[in-house]
Length: 379
Image (cartoon, rainbow, N blue to C red; front, side):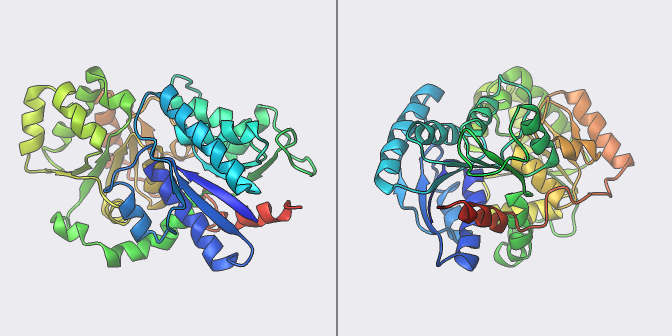
């Protein structure tokens, strides 16, 4: 079986590591993987280091699309992916999540009848002003195999009319939905101990034995709007009065802080003794920070889940989340970009520490399950 794996952003690189590892360890004689990086987000600190430390096989193609508007970027990727699929003639194209790379891969493959495997299918924020929501819906409705990490995702697809108990042969018109667990949970289990051995970030940031808050802010809906960015940083500065805060700065955030954050707050932020502003961290460094943090604040979907994997409470800096299960368990709170709600969420977890984290993301073998299902339907 030949599969083409499309990646375009940092989270997809990490997810692809689990699939590549499962192929290498269990299916090396049965599956050939062709890895394609669209270049949607390509920064040496945010991409190549992930390939190195996660032991992802070398890229077969880098499309070098680069940054552009949604339409221009997606069009370029669609054109290049179509040509690549015609050349490679794979049995499947594997798409992850909800980026423009996912959308481009889905459109290109569906039009030339290459079966699509969508990993992280069925997730819904129910907010179509988010580009990610459009991307994931389109990809789901173009796919032949849909692997959903959660029961909520499975239920979403059922409500949208996807057949649940159908028989093969499976096609774009007769797709198959599987509830299989989360591929990122596979990675977290695999790399959690490796992170402790391979990184010294806790020592380097002088965090040994010290409680700290881990914060990540990167969504353009927060960074590009001063009326949202300032309340978030008001809360961070208030929390920094009594807590250490570690904030790895996404390139977008670093850029927009200079234009969208009040000058007084910028001065406080960059001089505060309790705030550790650091460049983008590697995946293993992020795992180490998540394992040692007392609480996580984030607008990242992936980091929300990873906080749950490592049994940390999470304050979500968005009005909604596609990971509704972690909110339902009481281990995460939606605070949006509202200073008051952020502080209330912090106070809640201070007085009601999160202790019960039900196993809602599978058994750590999602990648193997997915590959087995793909192999079963190859003619």
